[in-house]
Length: 136
Image (cartoon, rainbow, N blue to C red):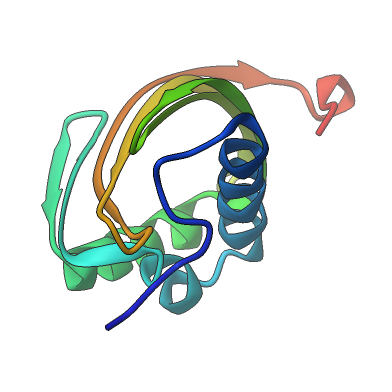
């Protein structure tokens, strides 16, 4: 049985650890590594995309990081209870034309008993920025 420590129910310390692990994994920009944190049948809503299953997550992330170059993410624990965690995040990236963006949002996470994320709902807003205005 796959497990991804720490396991729910979360304490403040283990919720912080889970958030930091997610930040580190996403900053690797490695779809293979990132998708292993999710259940085989994970359910996502990412902006207007509805993604089902680990393989779709891997495909989605591959496309994402082909478009969002030099991606750098920061996540912050917002709250937690039982097997759920809410985070706020922001990340910066540029497109192939060199235009920089900062993306802001919130994520709601639900984990199974093995610490794998079974649901992820993300609301995200983007704004164009100048490279000189980056801070991540």
